[in-house]
View (cartoon, rainbow, N blue to C red):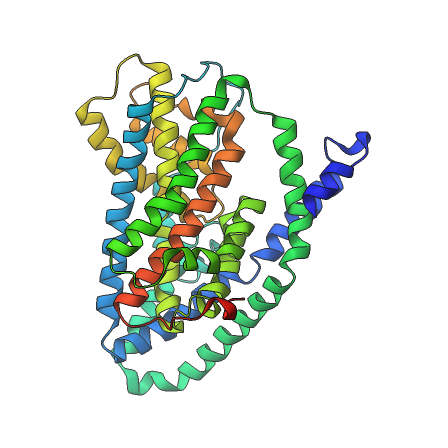
Length: 397
């Protein structure tokens, strides 16, 4: 519907209006309205239940291992494919002005504030502090299960109520996506794609399709996935389309919360613990796109390939920068890329500005890949631990 409205807009509105921008921003906020609450409240009770069942350590260890390894491998893939295929160099002209970046030290201070109540006040910007608080709270409850049981029904009620709010929002998602997708189309039209960037953008689009339909399904099967990966992709179609229409992991994750339960059949406790972990620490798609962007920028500045030492440094900086950016949930590719450039230094501190003209399509590709890998990785962990009930395609929502 957003695309149709874009096509029929009168010439006077073709560049957008303040009202379209306002409605888009409002719809994005509504789409993720209950996400932080649903994720946060679900963690303590699920940690308690998994600890009682002696599954918590195994599930979290597997999730952390999968996230760390996948991020490093993704960084290697992003670096390697650009070095092998070498798209056309980017023009060395900045069209951006100042590029926003994040401060990792600010995140560390936010995780351990002066008062524990401060984690709630920073949750509008950072999810990681309140997520870790919920984890610690759940571990504290599981330490003394007898005394903790009276509070569990309260947490359960809040968790279910927040899930129902998110459920309702997912029901009206089609309406919310109208102004979001319309604003997205207008932004793509207004920014345009300079001819010098089309080679890089085409390269990223082809890579995105290859990852979703070839590499991710293959990795899923290799790591022990038992279902047909393309049936899983069909089950993921709702969140994937939301990611493509919005370019926001914030709203696509809110939609995915319902799909992983009702379409993929992942049990509630496993989902509540693994979902936020992968959402922050398993953003494989963003790592690949940021890695591709950085190497494309590097080759535009330098005639030589990065040295072995620089590549090893990038294999550490790329996952770190994306994880810091993902901790804010709303960060886009340029913010993550800017952080990589600042940490890498060596004269590349302002390199992210070269990618600003195609920042929006790059962010859309990264969001689609992040959403796909989120649901594949959840399925892998759940199946390895017997926490997934396989559903037939006709029962998908």
